[in-house]
Image (tube, rainbow, N blue to C red; front, side, top):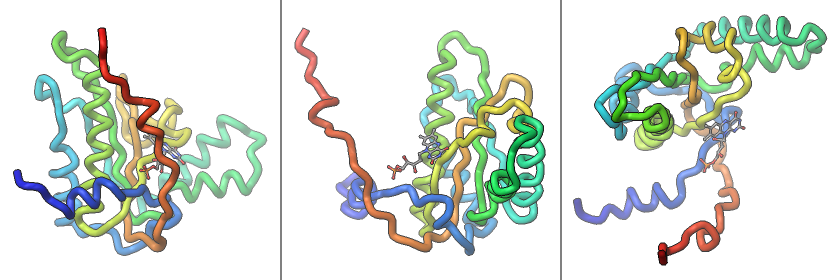
Length: 192
Ligand SMILES: Cc1cc2nc3c(=O)[nH]c(=O)nc-3n(C[C@H](O)[C@H](O)[C@H](O)COP(=O)(O)O)c2cc1C
């Protein structure tokens, strides 16, 4: 593979675009299929595909919001109306969200951590695919990725869990870069 300046530029400058800045239009059906094909092309010890994807778009976004609001109220009956409205709107800003479920497949040579990392790679690769097609994206979890009732409502089955929700849409703002880690403090050379 020869050097690819465009790809290098992308890798050096890519920024997540917050959910509030992701609007219509979202990917078409054909583009979504492409995003999923690229997104699931990840390292996967044992070829287990220890992940599943849940597509959230259209009317499903508001329906899920109502259900999230119900679960949030059940968890905290004192929740005020403004906070309930936040839950109703969780999936409304972006036209499309892909929920990534980690689905552990027991196999001695591929410990759970390796499979979890493979699922995390799907999240990040879905972002790369979205950017490559001209969209922007953000990978978040939020409380409902850790709440059992919410996870079930969103599509996780027994033993499964969400590792992220990749929100995808057309960016409405250019996001400034954030501080990046001081690599010099994080990298050492092994000296025995
Ligand atoms: C697994 C995971 C979960 C995250 N969950 C959230 C979240 O719930 N809320 C949030 O504001 N940011 C969350 N973030 C951070 C966002 O992705 C954030 O936009 C990111 O740090 C921006 O960095 P970037 O521009 O380098 O992509 C999460 C990040 C990861 C890796």
